[in-house]
Image (cartoon, rainbow, N blue to C red; front, side):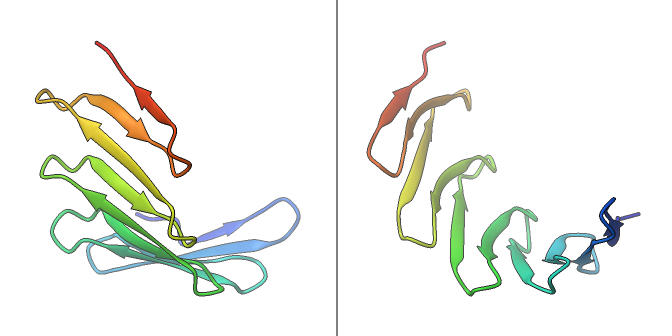
Length: 103
């Protein structure tokens, strides 16, 4: 079962909509603003999130279903690299800062 309606202590309500196979497709907040989620039809991973104001973020994955990049509504991109064992080895932030991971 999926939670489709959440009532908060302040009386506000958040509603969620799912597709036929149970993937989140949209959430509507107490003010009636809807955020849409677009999952990949094969993996179910979220590939796009569109906010109520129409701004979209895109998400890309490798063949191991690991996030390789994410582009925000401002066009800035986060990038991730993995080693042959699937471990995160480098992350490049939208501002260009690079974080390297050693194992």
